[in-house]
Image 1 (cartoon, rainbow, N blue to C red):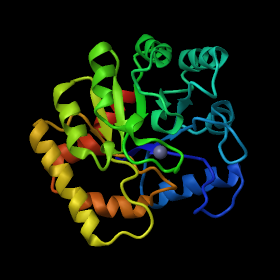
Image 2 (cartoon, protein in one colour):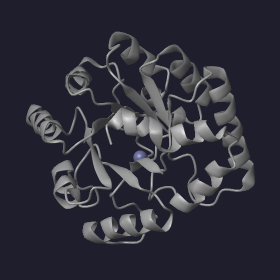
Image 3 (cartoon, rainbow, N blue to C red):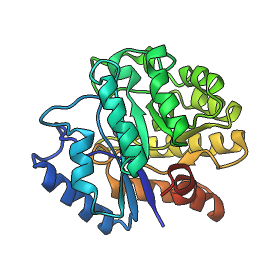
Image 4 (tube, rainbow, N blue to C red):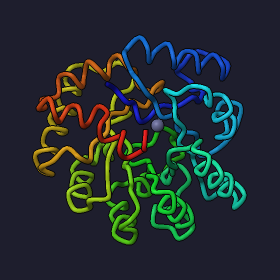
Length: 264
Ligand SMILES: [Zn+2]
């Protein structure tokens, strides 16, 4: 079984122009092509013609039992009412967690204004996913997305489950220490490859993942995710096959950890 815990329905510059409905169909086709059984769709930190709102995504994917939704939230673009919508969606089972984009909107994850999101996630025993590491948009600021910031949130909210997206890449070593130290922190391996990547960087990342697991001593904290359509699902599966893992550990990372964490 495969659970991809990190995909988007946004329109990006490098992907072919398509309507939201077409993009959903492409996602479903790509999932079945590569044998992905379940995907979590993350909505954006802002809504525009390229980035559909959480409610629009929920409406569209409600009827599919192989798709779940993670609600994006931002300090600048969302209000108290949006948070109340999230509360309702949690209650109805329409969302499985929330996502913050701190580096994109220039706030530290431990900013007090995010606490309402953490409280809501704790209340519904749902994880909050937080973008860490390199930022896709040039306007983003890296100090807000450095994985070390997650330690603050993890320590102050021991009941909160946090997923560091993208292994904090390229600060994978910092991500590793935050995972080791905090049992309530997880990380997804999504978005590590864009466009054409040679074997060199695959080798590099694969070694970092093995080292990270050796350091932590258990694979309970890692989740398989791609960041599709930014990263390619087929490429990702081929890459991950080459990461040296015990078969049981591979199963945990490919789907078992995510199943428990997101209640899939
Ligand atoms: Zn993403």
